[in-house]
Length: 578
Ligand code: ARG
Image (cartoon, rainbow, N blue to C red; front, side, top):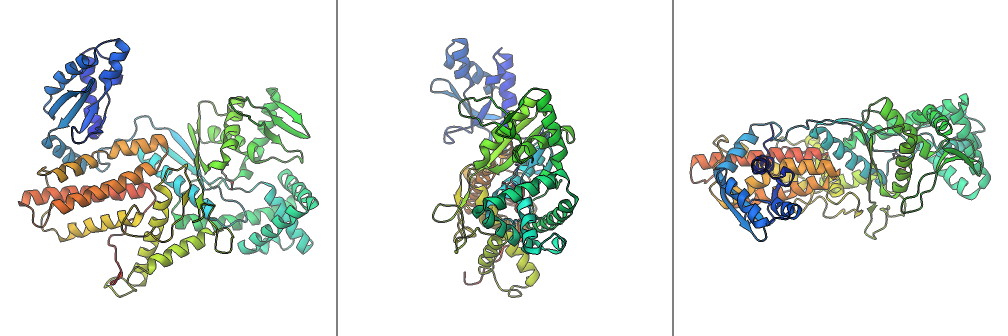
């Protein structure tokens, strides 16, 4: 059921436009820019008048005259050059609140044209523990995944493990250098493997021949050398197990754990296809595919590197083909650092040129970096990259210090407190990551990020816990909404924006639209609650109405947090002296 107020009014205006013989594409309304004047406005008469060379005020007056007949409105006015301002009757808004409170999707229907969306996020690599740079892909990616799913699309998430590039050869070469062979390779754990990788990195930076050797081993591995494959399989298994733990903690969900290696065979097919189509050419020992330059230089993609191996680009091209062929993808969303945007432009352009994923929408959601106080990518005190695990531990310590000790509050032992610590710390980290525009970077803030005031995750969690407590203490049940004051009306109109907010976040792939709205809704609730007592309401009916609004806000905030990948605790504790 579509119970979005905006949508209901749109249907009304569209019907009137049709009746008057006007192009109903101009009939859409939006939430008023001037809440002091109206609830919604329709500016279609202006655009229409331009197109038909008519007087906009006249067109607007005709539309307004029809709107007047509809008893949903208390006031219709034509202002300025031809804006139509619409004000709803309180009863109409109240009825809408009753309707959506009875719908488990709060009146937001699933899309009638669901698409199969493949989401590529996470992007971890063999032998590398997740660091702060991986945080954003997981957090933003998971949020978009949930938004797409709620919207009604069929979503398939794939972690796209980095398990096929030169680092593989580097690690194998380093093990061979130190052990003489790969006999012990399958005994190493993630720490040992990461350490080999670090040493290999240093060596390859200094020594061109070590780099050469790593490339040779990578190419042989890709080519099927059984000894290399066996050792590689172990590296991969150990790395997958390690990052799975991280993603579980982040509650990032992946349907598929495929990797770059899974695209190997298809990469071969891509090479053949490019050759058949006459698109492949040799350049300096490498096989390349040239791309059209639009308004900036567009380097060719490398199909086969000069050492004979497949690289990052062809792997992504082949993976797009597999997602089209095997998963029937209609859209593929890549949530990856925006510094990789040229890579994705190249991949998308090559995919189109080869015609391997026809009509598939390819979208790179590029995010900015997580920075330290100096504005540069976040580092630890000693200048190293901040491990994700350490970052989470640090945040938990901070949160733990603001909560009561285990068993200080009845019913909250060690287990309960730790669960709350984790829920609040993750909310703080994730909300901080999701409250800004995806494309911009942000400064990771460890002082205020977990505060209960301000634009933080814990603030929203706290609003939910507060409503839980109100509902527990109330002696009546929530019932029919009656609007009796300005704050109730404003809250109801804010609640009514939910569906359009979610639709916008889906269309723009932008979780910050959800976090902004959650923050404003929590604030609007606060103003409402300060002005409209529930305990001392003017009548039992008014108390019941306010309870219904409160419960609705709680349930909607819970949904919004869910869409951001955040859980809300039932109650929130604070240290006694905090
Ligand atoms: N593993 C890559 C990296 O660490 C990210 C992968 C992103 N996804 C993709 N399909 N290219 O840079």
